[in-house]
Amino acid sequence: MTEARIVPVESPNPPVATGTRIGHVHLKVADLDRALGFYRDVLGFQVTQRYGDQAVFLSAGGYHHHIGLNTWESRGGSPPPPGTTGLFHVALLYPDRPALADALRRLVEAGLALDGASDHGVSEALYLTDPDGNGVELYWDRPVAEWPVNADGTLAMVTRRLDLGALLADAPARAA
Picture 1: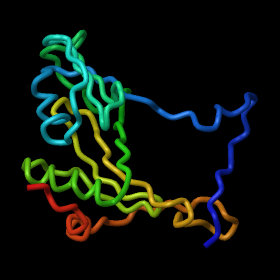
Picture 2 (picture 1 turned 60 degrees about the vertical axis):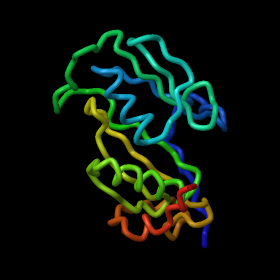
Picture 3 (picture 1 turned 90 degrees about the vertical axis):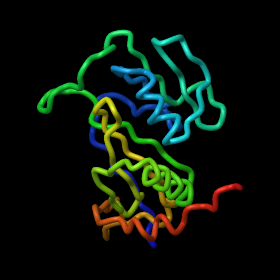
Picture 4 (picture 1 turned 90 degrees about the horizontal axis):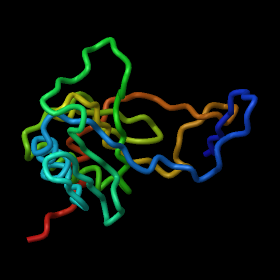
C-alpha cells in the first residue's frame, strides 16, 4: 500500500512544530454534576481535581487533565443555538479498536444514543452529543500504513457506515 502524504497548503509562515498536539479541552457546562455523569460515569475519565461546584478536571491514565469542565460563565445556561459559531465537536482519541469498542459498550449500557458512526478509512468514529449540547467524537486511528491513498499518494479519507455490531464484538471482557 502506498503511504499517505500530507500536501500542505501554501502559507507565508513555517508550519507548527512536528509533535504539537491538542493537550486538553475545557468546556463550559450548565450543571457540573450532570456533565460528570457523562464524562466520568459513562465515558470513564477519572477526576484529578475538583473545585467545589464550579470546576472539575478529568484524565485518562493519570495525566493532569484531558477534559476541564466549568460553570464559571455558564451555570444554568443553555447550549448555543444552531447557526452560531463555536465548538463543532471535541474528538477523543482511543488507543486502539478494543478501547473504542469498550466506549461503545459504555454508551449502550447507559442508554445513550449515537448521532452517527463512521468508518473514515483512516479511523473509526462514534458521534454523539454531551448533556450540554457539545458534539463529541470518540475514535481510534488505524495505523498510517493502512490509510487509504489516491494514485498520487495523497490521503483519500472516506465516510462509510461503521458496523457497530462488529465493533461491539471487539470489546474486551469486563473484569469480574
